[in-house]
Length: 160
Image (cartoon, rainbow, N blue to C red):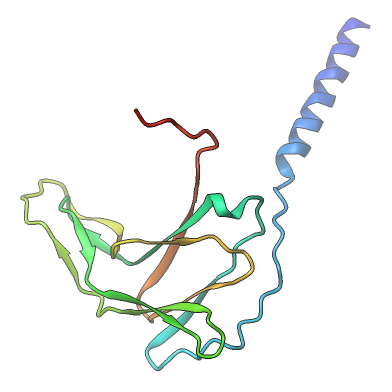
């Protein structure tokens, strides 16, 4: 009887744990209008990042990484290019236009290991988190955009 009770308890615990694990965090998105943004020019693509609604969005930042997947050695590599922040006329909304041929720079150390595939990017862009507006970028067709969310620490430290 004790074994049966123990088995039922274990199976129940596993069921609830599996259910909790299987349920993904539901992210809420606001439907955004992007009709006021210009169309992408020939040779470019429009990249749109829509952020989920978060509490205390003033405590968040977005880091944009613009780059290309490339086989590289052990040297430090960077994508050559320029990102310009522009404004949608009459709306005041910002967007980024990226100019890059896809060429990269690197240091020139001797590398004993074979090259590996890595994401080589320009200097990252740090911008505010705002789920009410999309982050819009116009990048060359061969360039990719990655991003990550930065969160402020909840505890403020006192400077000495």
